[in-house]
Length: 120
Image 1 (spheres, helix red, strand yellow):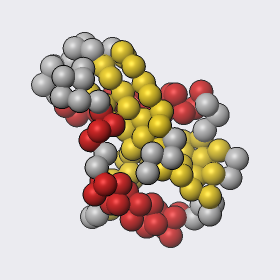
Image 2: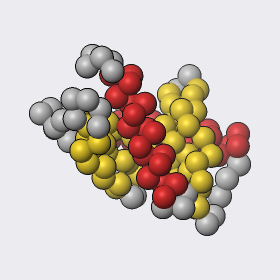
Image 3: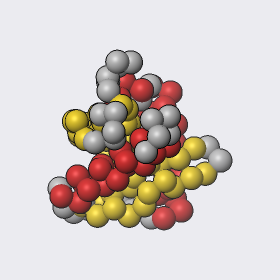
Image 4: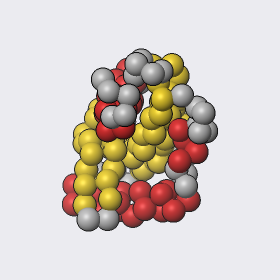
């Protein structure tokens, strides 16, 4: 994979995050759901809980931890997207907003995956 392919880093991160969530008995109900306002990376459900997951993946931590890229403005936008998603797709009244932080090496191999429940 070319080292400059940021989209590939994001896809690898999302694939790893989905695998992790499935291992935790979540069902992935949507990926990369888009509207004009933005995109939800992963929508997952388990036992009546709908979880909106923002995935941040980086090669290394030279520029900070991946989860640091989820700013208050980004969290606000994701909350708004979640309202739109639930209005159009239904879902439980119980919702949560998580972040999954993925650190990869230069070859896009997993170094660390952190799940941050109730991140915002």
